[in-house]
Image (cartoon, rainbow, N blue to C red; front, side, top):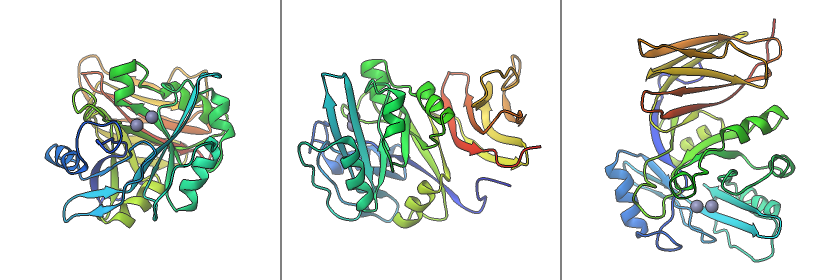
Length: 293
Ligand SMILES: [Zn+2]
Ligand SMILES: [Zn+2]
């Protein structure tokens, strides 16, 4: 089974962006132009505690967005919930729990994403306890450039190994419009840039997260997985089996553009990660292995 529909188009998007309506540098209009000029097709404007509305232009989509937070300096944890694609106008209120914030987004038909868990110093239990959210940021650019905690790769795998399978996103979380730009984004496989098509295909997991490499196709046949990529130096098939020395495919002399993996008896899921010669990575969604030999 091919995971990506070859008749669809690919749309490039950043779902975590700040403007001067909270603590970002630029106006919403300028932010749209910055991303449009770089070849993006969609963004979500997610100012702190301040909802923005969706806007559909002829060749660019702005999804409604907000970033809600509970910062707990006693237990040293920050819950930041990015809400996107909701219908109405979410109004932030003081004193709500992280679960309340997620529920607000879900109630308004939005997608709730747990932002930058490594930056936030969240425990694995935190992600496992919260209910109903759709995804987790595996990479957040500004958390990397300003705090050196941008990667949540091990975090998402650990919670996935305990049964919590969420969509995974790479984002900029742009504030400064300098080195926090264009460091992580998603590529959505969708028939159109229409808001409903994009949101539906994000919800279905028809996208991957990346810093640059492309994942052109993934084919799952019983217990075997094939992937086609842009030229990379390493393709890894991550799973919830800790003893596995067959998951990494690499070439010292040539670039790879495909690889395959035969799932082990102990794999319940596989996640594909590839890396180019500059160390930039792309991440597939979690693939549940349902048919086992
Ligand atoms: Zn945040
Ligand atoms: Zn943010």
